[in-house]
Image (tube, rainbow, N blue to C red; front, side, top):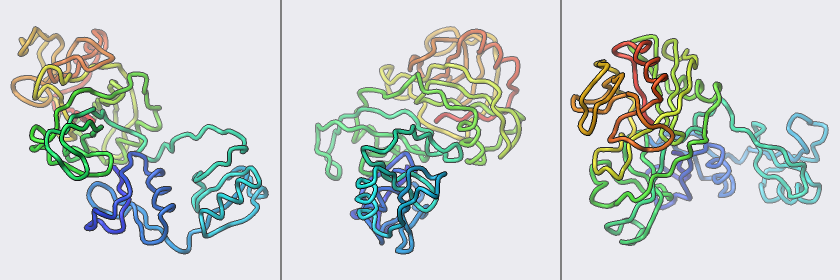
Length: 313
């Protein structure tokens, strides 16, 4: 998540929390000098400067179409509206498009890991927290540190979730399939290592598993499979959450799990369960495991060795 504030230690100045870095930058620029974009560790990702200029063109790759450069974003927007053009920032990112500008699909940057998201949840607030009253419904997301984040950036520690939140619905999109470039940029950007030449990433939002081969910073996507993840309806503990530290530690072709027999089973998190195995795909459907179609489960069982890193996000 990316947070727009004047300072990290001044949460009351926060204007919003964003999964997409560029959206956070736009928010900061609309607020003006003095605002910065922070990551979830409080590090400044970008700071608005008085020296930033906005360029108004018909297309970034057509500099001859530029009608001017402006330090004030509102002035740049007005110029774009008057000439049916587009406002770009200093790096060529689209900031604003006039209604009459030529419609061009905006593709996510393949080197920006913020295009990747994890599952979010509709939740009922059990106790008043910040501006959220008891009984209200919000959408929350579990961040990299496993804490729960509200739309305005308010955070609840992972061990306080049951006190403040009742998760009622999981929000995911099983049509979401990241391209090879995006998937590789995300895992390589995180500098994730594995004790083997393989890496397994389960993306909960898209209900897909991405299999990589290589090494830290140099992973290459090999396979993409549909998968099924933990369903909150089975009760506390059934939803895997997020983690970057798990790894496959045991393999069994048949394993009597907590609720049923599991086939082509690879334990990745704990002694009692949470494994990769054959089962339903395309939606949250397990008690905390990652299920794959039979042929894909067999492929993983045969090709992914013990100690392969498993990411769930």
